[in-house]
Image (cartoon, rainbow, N blue to C red; front, side, top):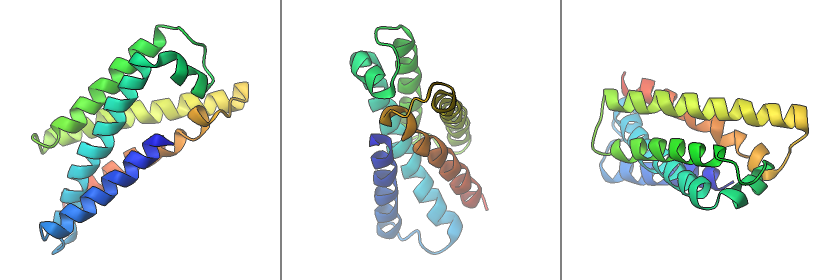
Length: 154
């Protein structure tokens, strides 16, 4: 649920920045500003705070997902999330192909995570909120990033 909140915050910050900078003249410049803030805020916050949760509150996060507590998988996942978050934050300063690399990594990670969560729902009937609801941003974020990327490049 919290990742949906970051997604919405990314849109709000992007829309405010778009109007403040006057980037409403054409779709490409508007998409560019929206993409900047989706990467920086949404990907950045999702990754950094997701990494923090898996690394420092692993048992609590595992319970919310319906996974076993105390596995080193949580640590691995935490570092992966942290890497994604840092790429998102760095997107504020590095643009162009760095953005594309960040989008590709984020997409593979989140869509892969969505497949794992969906498999858990079908095979193990795991409908814990941390497992089921998280599939929404796992699909929304990559779709948003690629649509904005293509619109910004027009």
